[in-house]
Length: 198
Image 1 (cartoon, rainbow, N blue to C red):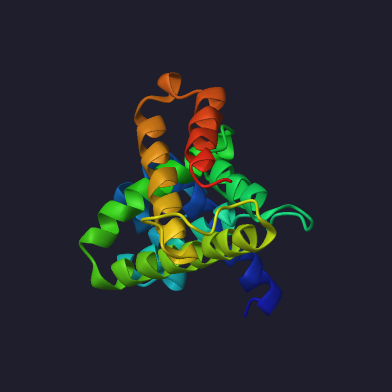
Image 2 (image 1 turned 45 degrees about the vertical axis):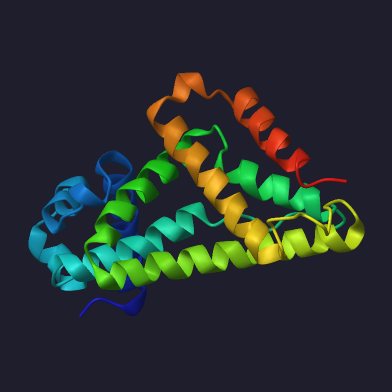
């Protein structure tokens, strides 16, 4: 019988293969067979870890999250600076983030047709909005974000708008990358943030 470390090492290899399939084909192309082909192994080996596509997809969400988890902003920045960094991190023009955004866009389609995946996506959004709202609250406290924002009555509402703005740019730049170079994305984010600042 293989040692536990061998089992964990193999599971790690499977997880990396899952990520490569996601990056190339999205959630729509994620199958046990596709992962097996990516690894050059039998489907039976993959089925040992994931007996059906549902369990594979649920694991893929964890893998995708681990590849796209956003670093915490450095201490000492203003709330506005942290909010700006959080939005720009999602829009980063590097191959890893571009690939990750395509993966998550494909996940949204899968989540629309599966209540369990929809719950996972809702939880991801809630968690992201909480982090954004914490930055907004910090900004309102340190004076870098106005406390009287009219329609944005509270930090959570500003976080909802920030998430919507960021993901709107994610989708547009995914389809028209040449039309949204990093400098333009940064300028658009700064223009939106200017509506929040004193």
